[in-house]
Length: 341
Ligand SMILES: C[S@@+](CC[C@H](N)C(=O)[O-])C[C@H]1O[C@@H](n2cnc3c(N)ncnc32)[C@H](O)[C@@H]1O
Image 1 (cartoon, helix red, strand yellow):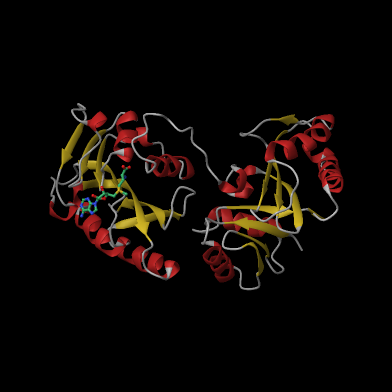
Image 2 (cartoon, helix red, strand yellow; image 1 turned 120 degrees about the horizontal axis):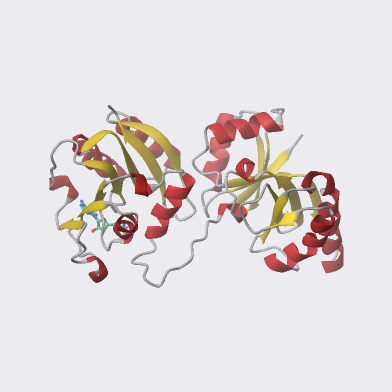
């Protein structure tokens, strides 16, 4: 029976496991790096069926997975570990011939794995190139994943889309731009990528809880007109921008003509139920089919129940498209909804 390594954001693995158990009642799971990484088997469910089901309806908290095709102990010293890695890479020869392959090596904090990520990758590359594979960091046909836990090394070869993310462990990295207004901007950039929703497709955006302006700056860069609502100040670099209007108001007190916006984004630091009421009251200001990207703050103790209650509430005015805990989300998840016609 095929087993997998699953990864979630720190502290959220229990919810990722819970989601999987609800979906696949015969599932067996065991933790590897507490709160973050675990191994699981789908209890009799064929591997392809499990992956197809996870891709069709992505769980909220499972960030990344890969199949365990080989395991090796970590107590034999560096030579034995290197040997196991090289042997696994060589065993993939028939599957990698003529394909491009990325090698992703990572480890838990308590792992005695004796190599850095780049060193580990360099150990495996010769066997892959000898087999006729082209090596690239991303955008490849296949990914060879290596994860070292406290005691064991796990390895597997899979298609990037079957891993749910083509980043190592789903840890999405953006280049840190010196002009970045806030780290919050990464959340919007990641949502754009993860949901396949190019922001440049929209024209008029409403940004609720916009200050200091990380999300607003991304939207302006994409060419949109932005109405930013926040009692707090926006960054100096945005002041006077010809496509930006800043309303220094509480979002619960603003009102707009029907159909004014084709995109709403909301990253308000507030109770998610209050935020839901505010966003839902503003739904008429959106055109039919307009998209909204909203961070749901998980300040209540039971994230799965909170999400399910909020889905029901948002579902009155919106069609729920996706809900995902992105790598850049902390105690929150990101939801994409569309205004019902
Ligand atoms: C996490 S920050 C937003 C960061 C922003 N997305 C960015 O990229 O820079 C949350 C913001 O929500 C604002 N906020 C909280 N409650 C609000 C409300 N009722 N109306 C408008 N803004 C609100 C706060 O003033 C704060 O600036």
